[in-house]
Length: 181
Length: 191
Image 1 (cartoon, one colour):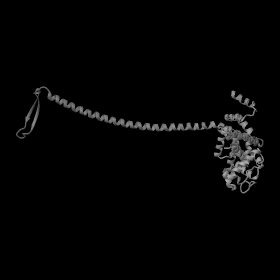
Image 2 (cartoon, chains in turn blue, cyan; image 1 turned 30 degrees about the horizontal axis):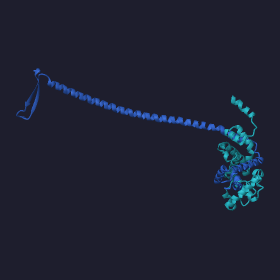
Image 3 (cartoon, chains in turn brown, cyan; image 1 turned 60 degrees about the vertical axis):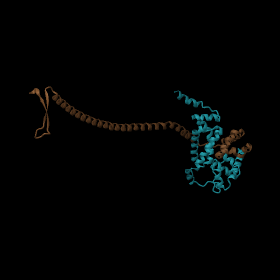
Image 4 (cartoon, chains in turn yellow, blue; image 1 turned 90 degrees about the vertical axis):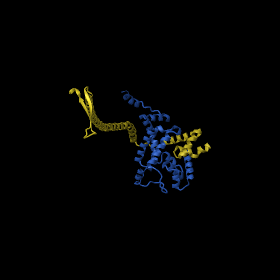
């Protein structure tokens, strides 16, 4: 690029006044880095524009400064207030969250306890039934042992009785306590 | 207590020095009271003038003024000194804010109830506020010929793109571009 031609093309002024497209602006900024004279031309126009603008300025109404300052500094002041408000809201939400969680936890616990109790009752019933059947079995065994002891007692005689003519197939075993006779 | 004593003391000693732009940028980034005072006292006139060259209604101009200072205050950390001077940056914020306001629906609806502005030609109104049209850049504009003056007015003060201007005035885009460049080059010599 012929930088002299470029500088005198009006691109410098267009750039400063904000009249270039994004593409042209990008290009201009790139050339500014490469060509110090372009940057000088830019600064020169900026200074001239600034001087012209300063010399020909009209003062705004006096009340405006106070209003703008209030707007700017009130905003700065309210900025820390906003997090506090949200923090408050956050705390409030947190508290209700905890409350809701507690209730859910409580209901859950009760349900869990009821389940455990049911299960426990069932186990108790089962246990009682088992105890019962165990006792019955033990009683039966005790009875069997008692009978066996009785049969094996000294003096006890076992006599096999064959069937009679009336009932030849009949058979009886007789235990006879010889000590008692 | 230290702070209580320091504040008024600081203000008593308020330096009347002229800050360089770099110093002012640093000061603005600190967001201090002094920074605002200096900024406003030194630049409000120039900024108010550019706003009034775009916006014709006083109350609206005051609103835009407030908007512009709030924007400068908030966006100072985005200002890049390698791309131009602080003043240029502020001037463009002001011009853009004013153009945005004029193009906003609320403003246009409001203006519809106002008497038709002077300087209408082929349906293209010149942006003008009689009270301030003869100061600042507008004053320089009056020295240009009518053709160039209109082009600068449409692009700079009314924010129309070159394409829009080409359509409005019924001339080719390339011609619009070269004429605006020429007009602007002439402006430079006058400034």
